[in-house]
Length: 116
Image (cartoon, rainbow, N blue to C red; front, top):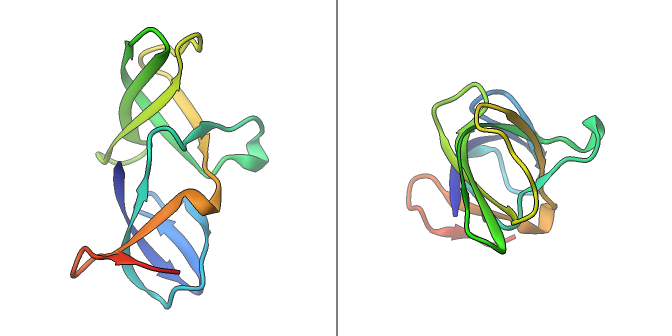
């Protein structure tokens, strides 16, 4: 799972690079979000893009393609799992999206899951 620090401010999930990942009903505080590699998707339009990833390496596993990189503008590492037939260039930047239901929340102090 990709674990990224966020600030929850006025109901918005703000990433380290100031991207807004979405909204939540969780009270304002620092937290972590967990994003499973298989739940992240390449955004089909600029309107659906929530974050971007700078690709450093791809690994073809046949049915799957693992994409390794960083959250754009940060040194936070990320992994993305795509279908094996998708072509991704090392060094490219991928626009990504994720459904709200697939964002997991963790308390930054205790690291325990926050139920919503």
